[in-house]
Amino acid sequence: MDTLHTYDVLVIGGGGAGLMAALHAAPRARTAVISKLYPLRSHTGAAQGGIGAALGNVEEDRWEWHAYDTVKGSDYLGDQDAIDFMCKEAVQSVYDLEHFGLPFSRTPDGRIAQRPFGGHTNNETGKPVRRSCYAADRTGHMILQTLYQQCIKNEITFYDEFQVVDLLLVDGRAAGVVAVELASGELHTFRARAVIFATGGHGRMWEITSNAYSFTGDGPAVLLRRGLPVEDMEFFQFHPTGIYKLGILITEAVRGEGGILLNSKGERFMEKYAPKIKDLASRDVVSRAIYLETRAGNDINGQRYMLLDVRPETVNRYAALDGRTRPDGSPYVVSAEEILSKIPDIADFCRTYLGVDPVKQPIPIQPTAHYAMGGIPTSIRGEVLADETGRVVPGLYAAGECACVSVHGANRLGTNSLVDLIVFGKHAGLNAADFAASADLPPLPENPQAFAGHQLAALRGGSGKERAAQIGREMRALMFDEVGVFRTEQGLEKAVETLQDLRRRFTDIRVGDAGKAYNTALLNAWELGNLLDLALVTARAALARRESRGAHARDDYPARDDQNWLKHSLAWLDEAGQVHLKYKPVTITHYTPKERTY
Ligand SMILES: Cc1cc2nc3c(=O)[nH]c(=O)nc-3n(C[C@H](O)[C@H](O)[C@H](O)COP(=O)(O)OP(=O)(O)OC[C@H]3O[C@@H](n4cnc5c(N)ncnc54)[C@H](O)[C@@H]3O)c2cc1C
Picture (cartoon, rainbow, N blue to C red):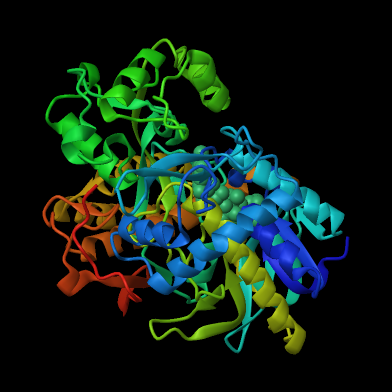
């Protein structure tokens, strides 16, 4: 196979954001998607609960309410112009998915069904609103299948099982990427007028996580190594309901359908922490409540977990207490069959991994590392930004979980990632194609594969004193203990120091497998290097931020501090392993920061 390829637009990543970008770039630009996984294995396929859009199909709703909820959910760190844009565009984007053939669950009269989700409210009553559009508990799976079929129909070129390990920049402009072909181990150079990164998240740096093994932050790490910054890395969301010990996600939709969180005393503890919307408060609030209940000794059997109870008798009892009704005004009373029909995959997970039938027994849960609010800084148009002044890197775009627009600020609302993929994936694709139409093909740098080759050679040629698996274990435990739901100065200092040390030890590993074909040991080690870099930046940015906001909760600085910290962080990592932080203002249009209560 020839190892030099030329395109107008290259999309790195075959998940929801990447496929959406490719679909919208392809009509006007020669487009290829490069993906380390076969695209249908992307993490988007794991998304369960739904995609938020104010369709108002089952009750009154408005995109402005969606925008306000998102701003509030973000703890006022989200950029309000971008949030307005996303929530407005969400409505048409969901209809576009429907027209692409996505099999949404339906209302009895045939419209797209909608259900409540954490933090999404009717702004007038403050009560939960049904805004999440879903296909049972397989929404992401359906999105991925639908978009992939559209890409095939539109004859988009795919390089499956090619892992991008470097970005090529010429005079500060994107010129292409270098990728390893997994089957042969060969390096390939891809030349392009525009490059879009859509490589997903980096939750594998924590011990308990809902994230796929592939979530190793390759995109942001590659850009960091090329001297570009990452934004708001201190904000990483812990989802309150991961399966105990395993971290596998139990979607918020279980609470949307009426599931209740209980402590060891059988108390519905969320009443204390969010008197208005209780179990459907935003994720940061619920995760912290679980942690505080644990600290107060109210965890189950002293084992640091709580129970999520979705048995019909429990759901119906609390629904009656809350005065919950169906859209037609009748009382909300459910049967086991109805619950199971809404969450079939979750029920399977519980049976398979816990031996628990969720309509007969409560589910043991604990917070699980879930979603990266931070990532590659971009404009509303998906352009990658090089610094705190908003300077654009010509020809370089990013979208999806690897990007930070920022619409999620300090905490993302459930259902808003899928919206982000669809809206900003589309616009990154359109804008990259526009750019490519008027830009000439940049020259390749001299010896384009040198930097990538050097990184991989170092992993093959280390002293061999250290084991990648051991370093990975230590990193994940450290991040979970010290850079988790609650953080302190002391813990974060320890994390920064230990991560520096782990990065030093990392240079001493030698990958045992000397082969070329499918050398996953080599690529896993390279991915561990990415996680270590991003973990260091995360801990360092968290240490600097002396306040609590959204998912970043400091025990020693419990209050939000708008005076000093209503700003985004940007972090650079230099060759000596030092992190440099700068800040830029949050865009505030019409929602003045207020105290957040649920
Ligand atoms: C269990 C779970 C449930 C969720 N449920 C919901 C939900 O109900 N609603 C919601 O809004 N959000 C949900 N989320 C979040 C949401 O699913 C993700 O944020 C989103 O799918 C990420 O999409 P993406 O396109 O950015 O990345 P992905 O879908 O993960 O795609 C990343 C792509 O990048 C490729 N890639 C990565 N690195 C490289 C590289 N070096 N070279 C080449 N290719 C590379 C991969 O092969 C993959 O194709 C959930 C997340 C999880 C983990």
